[in-house]
Length: 303
Ligand SMILES: [Zn+2]
Image (cartoon, rainbow, N blue to C red):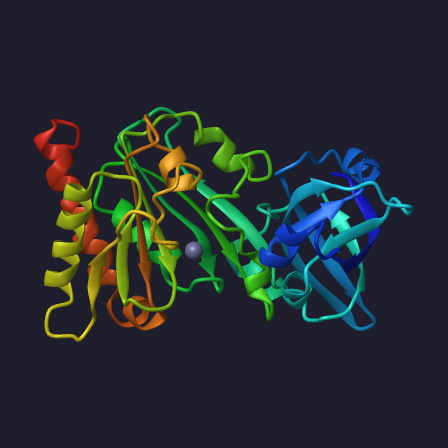
């Protein structure tokens, strides 16, 4: 583990528009990157130091920028606001992003961030993920576990992160940026080439959006199953179209990267209300579609 005191300063307009447009991105001086052992496009833990405490979070280093002072890290205003201020601030940078040695209970008490993997080390049938569980996108981690509960342990893996605390949004790293070097348990499965991968997320309307790079037929089947599971409610279930900004169809999205040809991930975005009131029913509907698909393919004997 490497750690350095840093100063988080303002992104330079014009030169660093990427940082201004992406609140999770930061630049770092190459000397500090080297001291931390952090490369480009990896995540780094940034902890804002306050007189009475600290605000921890995670950012993705998208630019190595030569600074006069080696300790300068830059973010756009929205990026600094993730740490609770529009101003510049003193912080600590750490190469270790997750504190997975903590139990979930300890993580919640300490406002921390943990990574979890349930995996037999070999199966390649299905992985269910929730990168933004805990308080970041509540109930998504529970849904991932619920889906897995419908399968034999040698037919499913789960990978999830849980983030807690008053600034839990600062733990959010967008699915396209998640780097397996920064998330070591993800690193254990990223090369597995799963047949299927499905991710659970929380977002704003439409109520439920079934995206990902998986064929539209599979996504339509999942959407139809969710519609049945939420019948009698006014929840709107849609299938993402190509190019939808939250459609999860891009190759960089972690749910797609986990599949064999990079084109069989399904990403389920849901409003908080959908998750809170119907999260279990949605998870069950998703599990039943995969059970059917995999049983037909001879890959998932009934539990
Ligand atoms: Zn998410």
